[in-house]
Length: 112
Image (cartoon, rainbow, N blue to C red; front, top):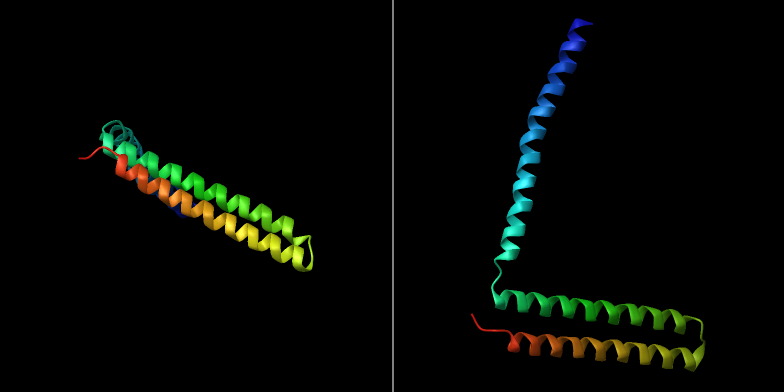
């Protein structure tokens, strides 16, 4: 019994001693990210906005495409084929527009 209790206490002590530095390190990482975000250059901020806008546009295009495909699934024959073709074309157009908007945004970003 004494051996079991000793082993349990030893395991708990080791676990707590290893967990404390890990918790401290994660707090240091989070505070460093906040400081780095506050020190971003104007170009970095502009590029981040460009990337976020592009990601949002692509996500919306994919969601719209998924909805159109789901709607086309209920159709049959030529109607379904036409709906699928229109959905794919709309998705491609949206992706192209998003890519062009991102390129324009990057060009307009302030230089280093």
